[in-house]
Image 1 (cartoon, rainbow, N blue to C red):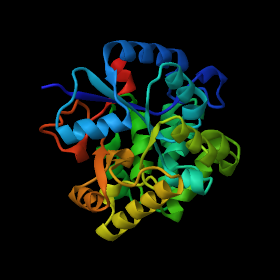
Image 2 (cartoon, rainbow, N blue to C red; image 1 turned 90 degrees about the vertical axis):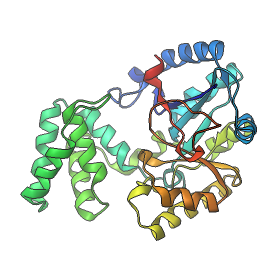
Image 3 (cartoon, rainbow, N blue to C red; image 1 turned 180 degrees about the vertical axis):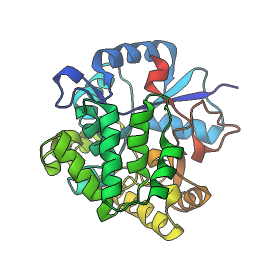
Image 4 (spheres, rainbow, N blue to C red; image 1 turned 90 degrees about the horizontal axis):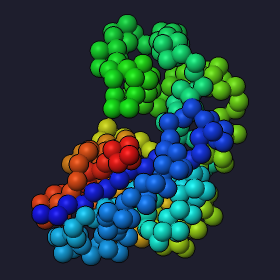
Length: 306
């Protein structure tokens, strides 16, 4: 059977000319080369084609989709012009809060801090010191070290530990305090000064839609849906739909891109009730429309195609 390959992008930029050149990103020239390769080798689907083939339960040979997560300014500055040049359609999944409240996601605060750290080991030492200072128990810290200190697909064990501890920490005053202290030490500017330069604006979203790009849901607060109780999951998904209504994106047969790839059976149940067609995960692989669950669509990282 023919399979659908979905490719996941985040930062796409000219790193040397960016404010934070050490943030891991796909270089613009590599992105151009990749688009040229994909256009030559694959049928790149737009939203309407995805709807049609999902209904037919089949997919043309060598099909793929391009997805862009988190709603970065890169996507309007660099990605959209290159897609337009090649008459390619993309699927964009911004987090609503960054646009509606001009605030920065925790994950991006972590990226910025880590990009400024000269030593990964010192960054972990600072984090562990702040955990102790903020009354995390020895037992909790040992749990973090046992479960989060490992090499990732693209991160060292030190960066993986730094990210996993803070990403999995509940949103509390303790977490905010730790992030604020680390940000001031490593970045030395105010967090709220950065939002405009990092994320898409409502005007940018409108431009994407006017150029026939698809804009779907990526949560409002960019939280791990699979770790929320049923009531909070429903609230988060409702807020996502309100955002899609606000930007005049489809709210029937819409697509959800799970923040951090986190979801559970309840997530899928709620999404089905809310006229959602499918969900994008961070599981690696391709997809068979005849057999696979549309709410558990797998994706390849862009690095898998370089």
